[in-house]
Length: 155
Image (cartoon, rainbow, N blue to C red; front, side, top):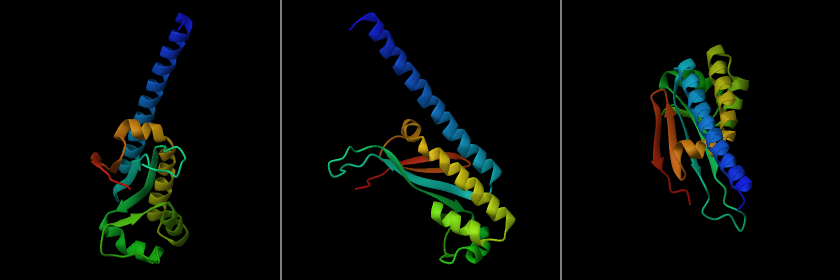
C-alpha cells in the first residue's frame, strides 16, 4: 500500500471514530435534556441489536421499539387520552401511541411531554452512535439517573 493510501485510510478511521464519539455525546445529551425538562417521564426503554438471521439479506444493527414510561401520577390523564390505557402499571408508550395521545388529550403539559418525546425519537436514527454508546444485543433503559444496559436475546 502506498503511503498516500495508508494515510487516507488512517484519516478516514480517525474521522469515523470522531463522528461516533460526537454521536454518542449528542445521544446522551439529548436524553439528559429530555429528562431535565420532563420530570414526569420515569424512563425510556428500547432494544438494539443485529438480527441473527435475515432471510439472506445482510443483518444490520438497529434500534427497536422505543417506549416512554411515565410516572403513575399521570394515569388519570392518560386514561382519558388513550382508549386502551391500563392503569395497573407505569404507562408505556411508543411512537404511534404518542401520536394518539397528542391528538386526544386536552392537557397542555401532557401534550408538551409527548411532543418532546417524539422530537427525542429522531435521535434514534443515529444507529451507529447507539451501537458505539451501548453495544449490540442489549436492552437499554434511560432515565434521569443515566443508562442501564442489560443483555438481550432477541431471536
